[in-house]
Image 1: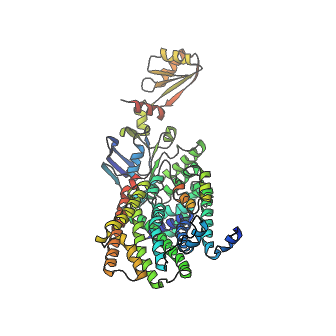
Image 2: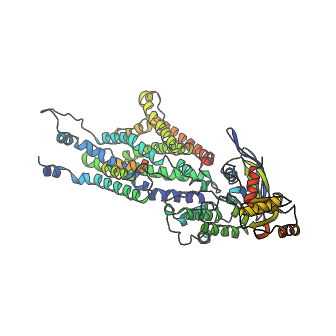
Image 3: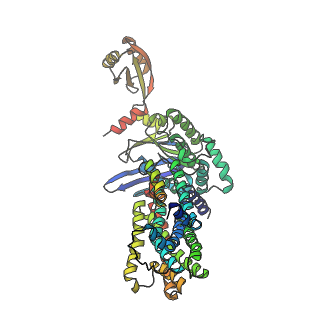
Length: 261
Length: 297
Length: 69
């Protein structure tokens, strides 16, 4: 426990001093503000850009609050995941490559404390960023759109989303425990995006998966998701996350010998 | 005698070659041992295995008197220690000390004392990103000793330093050696000569010579004599005329101590005194032993 | 519509947070760039990327621009 808090203090300090604590949340907040604004002002924007034939009529679909949340989620599923993977891809591999890890690994450290402190800091920052991003979006959505989803439904959606984000970040951390930084980023992005692609193509046949969580979460905003499928997906995701954490700890220990001396 | 560390048959096998091949040695308490060998002879690999960074392919490493995690009794200084550039020296020391098991109450004083000892007392608040090579080496030593380890493993502790810094660090190591067992690798043999109880010579991963300094010295010519001349010609003439084993090297002639006594040498020198500037006893330098050992077939 | 009219039509109350975020990201990236000397590629290139590419510029710097050594 002492080691965990020492390591967590180090992670926290590193996030603050490398500005990670600033830029990761700001990217999510930025998109959270941009998405509702863009859709609201799309007609004006198109008009001012011009180039439209005289008399061309636009029939933009009327967006509801829930539609904007869905479209922002689409952004977070691409740019958001990319940012998270890039932010955390070097968490463990970077300390091996630079050799800063060497002087930690020669001490009587617990690799569980080592991995879990990084995991806590990364998942904490990622989930916080996502909440802040949707929070920002919510303040715009309630001003610009009608109808808007109720507050409790948005919270339920965010809770489900948090589980998915925690899974994505855990995958990145364990990839970083297993592989060098570049490989870790490739593996994490590959698994996340290929998963989303497969889910898009044949997802109808498979209802329990981490990649389904965002859709089930969004369903809270327009009605309610199938509670059995949601529970199943949450269970599968939690199980996979625990497996990833355990293998991350083992891999961090195993790969300590790859640290630059 | 009470060995702190006993190593037997230590081997590290990589695809196709053995970086370390069957090392067997022991480190007695409060002694200093120098690990000597050319580049690529397996010094760093050996130290990495002892530090627990690398797992040996075969052989045993036994720490006597260590708890269940031998890493808590070790202090390790790599050749080029790497630190988190965004940390301050004091923050780093507190992390290192805490991870090595020092209680929260003793951490602060231990860190201050250690930073003072290595000459970084006033740099505690500085970011490590701005540290010079010499300062990093000092901090590297500080993090290795802050938890008062029974065994210090140092990989080329002084070779990156300038002569003044080297001198200072050697003095620190000597002071530490009074209460700590030290194993260090070096290729600067003057340093090894200065602080060593035992020598381990490595070549191609194998131990080709080992033993206390005085024994190794005796084996490779022991003490002898050195006669200095005003010029090379005189030296060569003297060596050529001498009836015993004498080697001319520049303006000096070295004579093995086994082949002749001081009286005989002086009697001979009295008859061939032309160009002699100095006659004295000389013990064989570690550097000469090193050359002989390394070139040995 | 004149340029000033266009400017006054922009809903500043809604847009200023975007500009603020933009400026904070840019400032943070420039401070960080000034502090450490090692970047992947020339530092001056990163100054331009940070200043002239909206939002993405600073993020690119933070993710792939810094070299850890």
